[in-house]
Length: 510
View 1: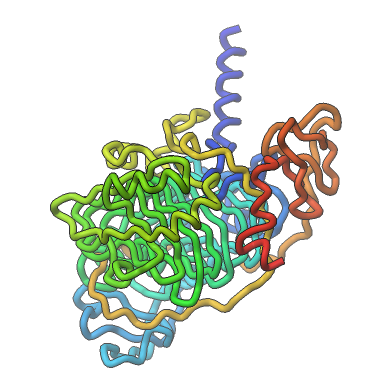
View 2: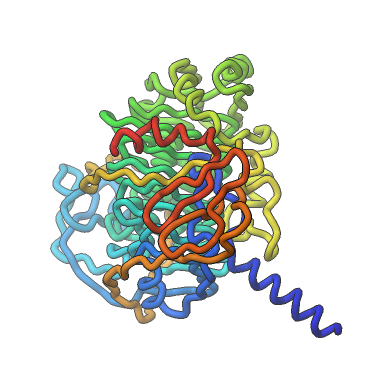
């Protein structure tokens, strides 16, 4: 009997370890990833690439280090006079960031071939690291139009850290409608930790650690410069309870002149930063509340300080002004004496914008709780013990908006940012380990659906209620409607949340 009970407990724990912890929230509300698809634990880089590439609903578990490094390549590029590789600076591959007066041409740069070729990710995936999964030398990139994806508990590291344009950790090609990136860690990456491209995406980036500690940086200052940027025209992004430390720039960069975007940055902890945090452009409507800045040289850039589309909640009166639009007061940001000044911006038009999507907003913690909470919970370790929910981490504060992935249909070319003249960068990076990387370019397999369950009864909120080969119940509980995303997947969505099908960037591109 004792053996049977113990075995049951172990089996239950193992099952919990192979499922998503918590529920997607913020602008990613309603995202289910692989749903109830049977978990598959990958054992090789080839298998991972194959499972990620199609649109079949999958739960993919990575419980070990997968090292893609070890194959060298060479290409032309340049160095910077102001922050050269000999003094701890990065090299620049290709010609996108070369050609200015500060550049010195280099005919041959050796780098690891895995970095510039990320693994392609299709729709309907839960990609789970459980605090043990590590991707070394290669990142992930959601394909144009890929939607309904959860990435949780992974570590991304060592992607050509000495080389700009040597690879990003996590990229969104555009039209990525519904992605939850939660409890991951990013470090030692040559270019962006996270980047979205020109077509709109709907994302929640929550409870992640962005560790910029390095000895090779774009600004020779021990902080990684290329943190994250969101270029998508119509992006909707929640940034909640993330830990940004030892980073120097684009932390985050919100929007671009000539584009629009809606960004809610709440309860993030910024620490030990020798460059800037918020770099925000006209057209990017941003509500910045309840964040904490500790030894941050520039909480915002001069460009952001001149923006007419930011609401930074500088004081209690500005917080109270949120009540009429949002139904609650906004949380004041906290900036310590070792930091620069956070611009006091109160664009009322921003409150009107967020009032229209208030069901997708996260209710903030008090700023006094943020530093301790984020340091204890951010990153893969914050997922705590198997089968339990991290305290106050995964959606407890969010309102019950259940947003449906509605895949927009436009696409765009990648951006080619101009060479940066800013001097600020991380300074400490290990060289990629010499193991056997695998170059994979899998052909996507056709979607097969994942029907299961009984056809009787009703479906709980956010559950699957239809799709080709689905055999479960099709009637949703009261207040929810069975909403079709594609031929393979329908989900029970709250009737009050269906506004997104008629308003916003995704609806107007249909």
